[in-house]
Structures are given as structure tokens and as C-alpha cells.
Image 1 (spheres, one colour):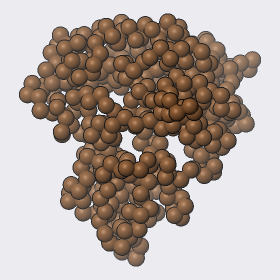
Image 2 (cartoon, one colour):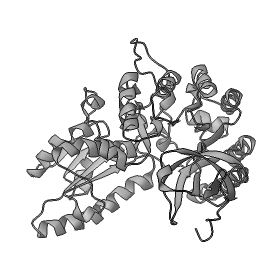
Image 3 (cartoon, helix red, strand yellow):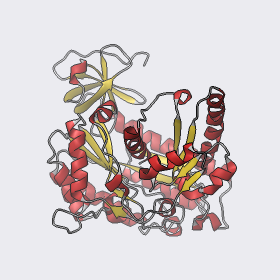
Amino acid sequence: MNVYDSHRMADTLAPEGFTETATPEDADLVILNTCHIREKAAEKVYSEIGRIRELKEAAARDGRQMIIAVAGCVAQAEGKEIIRRAGAVDLVVGSQNYHRLPQMIARARLGERVVDTEFPVEDKFEILAAPEQSAIARRGISAFVTVQEGCDKFCTFCVVPYTRGAEVSRPVEKIVDEVERLAQAGVREVTLIGQNVNAYHGAGPDGRPATLGNLLRRLAQVSGIFRLRYTTSHPRDVDNDLLAAHAELPALMPYVHLPVQSGSDRILSAMNRRHTRRDYLNVIARLRSARADLAFTSDFIVGFPGETETDFQATLTLVEEIGFAGAFSFMYSARPGTPAAEMTDQVPPEEKSERLQRLQAVISRHQRNFNAGFAGRTIDVLLEKPGRLAGQLVGRSPYLQAVQVMAPKKLIGSIERVTVIEVGSNSLFGSLENQAPVLAAAGV
């Protein structure tokens, strides 16, 4: 979501004369686009502000004005506190207001310190400037597209309902228009994103709410789009129409990220996840019935308040039962203002750390086994960019694995049949079908 938001901020500022630079030393405007999901991410913002403050002071000595902006969910959550705590910051813009950046920057240039974190009445997507074709082309052949924002689930550990607001969905045709522009600029793979993407209910052409399955079917018809993905989903919102889309659409990749957070019903209830372990297993079974080659990844929180060793063992057994292709796992981080932060039975940090190590060892074993199963197989690879070796390209499998292959640059943007000849720790190495194998993994 933040990658997409950052691109749209750059697109919005392009008509104002701004261009992107790779180094902050050259910047007249530095925007820190932030995440508030975990405490470490939030604290990193202030550390980064301190580093950029020195660049701002150096620019001032050279007679140049540098504006520092903090955007995103930390901005939304902390607002004026950022200005109080970090004097170098000129403006703070919430996650729903970055379409107002041009006006805010103009005020900041005149010396005003600006904070805008109110949830707006207007739809920012109606106001944002469309990206230039050249900007899309620079970003590569894969793109994110926000279709839904916000969440109504109110998990007790989560700040999203407070920083992103209630669930809202963009109309189908607005999304189609954006994806068509992406395709015209050379994008071949689109990932639909939202805090709770499968709760999508945007207006369809007939004015009635459409499902995520409806939207995926429509986007599968866009010329030039070879692959579709979506993330992140909630187990409660996997409906029959989405199952049917997985069964029907070759462009919809067989790779589903479905956060479970815990394998213990007691902890799931304390988290207000609104699903049980059995519910989750049933959703996995239904998805596998729709398409047998589906692979799954998930999210886990270790050390949620009140978690016992028995609860943690239930998480380990769930991982073993499903056999995830990968997962993101984190120690519980108390977020101010959430119900879980007020719970009294917090797990000691050393216990959280030890459990996280055990969980990650099990997840890594399953991920290695999943990748090892591709040795000798021939798979479709969407080639994306040059690799680190001369004559090498890097692409993605249907399961998002990085695949490195010796191939000419002219094949970037195409899907090629690749035979996997070696499985590395983080990549698959292959050769084009009907081409003699080239071992390029050594030393990489």
C-alpha cells in the first residue's frame, strides 16, 4: 500500500514541477511515507528525520530550501505530535490526504508548519493526477493498484481502522481505467491491494456493489495484462465468487496471502479475529478445491497478550498442517489506542523472542521444501528486469519466487517457459525451455 501511495504522491507532484531523485541530498522535498503497524517502524521515522535534518541544514547553508514532510499512517496517528517532537518537519499529511500535497507544500514554503490528518469528505482518487506513461514505464512491468482502503474488523491489536478509516472501495470502471493505462505503458502484472482487499464492494457498471471476483473477471479482459494478484485478505471475506474466480481465470495467480495470526482459538478470540482455527482450515480447503495448485502464505503474531505455550504450540501445529509456502511473523507490538495495548497479561519480551525463533524455523523449513519441489520442473516465468550477471534476466514464477535465467533483454515483459535447474536459498535458477542449461548461480 505504501509503495502505491508513494507513486501516487510523486504523480500528484509531477504537474507542480517536481521530479524524483535517487538521493535525498539533491531533494527540495523529502517525503517520509510511514507505517504504524509496529513500534519499530514508527520509531524508525524519528531516526530518519534526524538524518534528513542534517541535509536540510546543509541545504540552508547553501541558500536552498528543503521541505521535510511526514506522510502515511504514523502521520495519521500522531499528527501534531510529530511537529512537536521533530522541529525539522514542515508538514504532516495523513494517509487519506496526500491529494492535497501541492497546496500544503505551498504553505510550507512560506514558513507555515502544516498538519492535515482529518479524514476528508472528498474522494482522493477522484482528485489525484493520473500517472504519466513515462513514470509508469520507469517503475517496471509489475504494478500495485489500490482497490479498497480501510477496515471494519477492529482486531484488538491493529491500528488500521484508526489510521486508514472505515472500509471504502473504488468503482469498478475507475479501477479498469487505471489498469488500462498501466497496460498501455507496458505493465503486464497487476496486484490489487487493500487493507482488507477481499471485502471489496465497489460500484459495478450497473451501480450495484461488485465483488472482488467480479472485479478480477473484468480486469482479466484488459489487453496486455497477463497476471493478476491480490493482497491482503481476511479469512471471513473469502466468498464463493472469489473461489469461482480462482477456478475460472488463468490470469489469476495460484498464490494467496491469507493472514491467520494465531492457531489458538483462545488467542484468535482475544484478537477479535472473528474466525476460528477450524474456520481457517475450511477456507484453505475450499480454496484448494477450487484450484488444486494453490499455495498459501500468511501472517503470524507471536506473544499476543495472554499467549501460553499451549497457545503457541497450536500455531506451530497449524503451520505443519497447512504447509505454507512462506509467511511473515512478528513479535506482538503494542499499538497505542488499541484494546490489546491495555491488556494486563503481556508476554515477556524474552519469551516472545524465543517463540518467534521457533516459529520462523518451522516456516523456513516449509518454505525450503516448497521451493525444492520446483527442481527439474518447467514453469511460466514473467521476466521483469536485468539480473546481476551479464546476459541474465530476473523474473517471477506464478508463486512470486524470484527466477534467474540467462536470456536476452528483448524478452523483458514476456512470459517464458523456464526449466528450473537449481534451487538457491532465495531464488530459482533456470534455463529457457529448449535451450541448453546454463549454470549461472555460482557466486550469486
